[in-house]
Length: 196
Image (tube, rainbow, N blue to C red; front, side):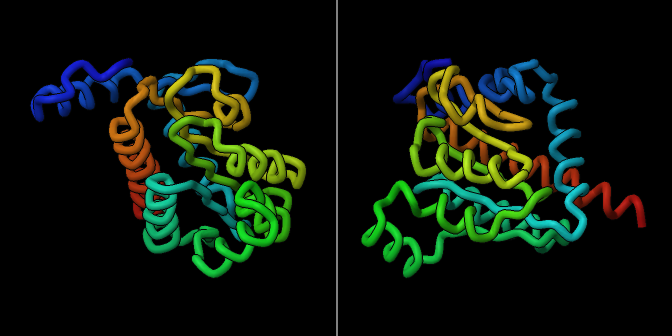
């Protein structure tokens, strides 16, 4: 979906509202899932981790999104959740080994079978995200992806669950990813509370 109203706040927000109804979710192999079913499956991925961990990666605005999701997973859901966005580590890895390694290397060191990698990329084409996702797969991790822009992006093809926002607007894609993350963590926290 293309943004229709670039110079009107009401149009911008209207486009965003419409976009929420257009989110597409696929499972591994490309099978389409209804949004409610997909969110329920994502919640089950989180709650099924037990003592295993969730690792979250993203660049720029997506790094802010995964940082927020990590906070909610840790505090509200009680998961062992980690982000790899510490500035000294990022700058050391990117300076010494290239920016494409900044997530792959930590994933390679931390990932264990049964862990979960949450990978967020507006384009779904960031090489450092895509290669980290492949590294997580090689280590037996589950993979939850959030992407946008072109429907055939590489990240969207990689996960067990793939949330895709059909828009070329960074703002719309990032806002939708943020709200989907809140939806998943809020539902997980509610399920835990109801089980007590």
